[in-house]
Length: 190
Ligand code: GLN
Image (cartoon, rainbow, N blue to C red; front, side):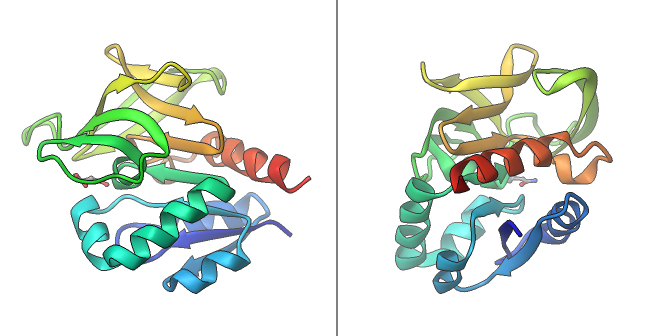
């Protein structure tokens, strides 16, 4: 059975675990970096990216950066910020596995949470997108595949083994984004 780790330092890791279980994968909450050796792929959930950095510390950040090179990783919202090459508002370090520039809390305070639906490359049905104090991807590098966008900005992207969304697919009923990630993980295992 495919084992998916959900980084459970803070944030909304629960919903990701439930979705992975629904899709037939085994979800494991990852609290210690030593657990990374036992999983086939990792989800970095939403939360506060600055708090993640603080809780990870220098060592945890190094471990995570190494893991991202070897196995598929899916980041949502704060997870997307952590994976980015460049972070703005304010500037903060990122793992750099995803060649994007991301602006934190880019939609301002009034409209900080919103639900939209839009097209995506995951199928004909429009994709629901739940945004919570969301970042905005301001730049995507040439090898970044854009799977969905909002107002001309990428919101679901893939680069190699890294998948990232600026919204929260774990809060929608639609399982397609997690399903796509599981496919990436299964392809790597074979
Ligand atoms: N605003 C958060 C940050 O900048 C991200 C919000 C989220 O993950 N829902 O890290």
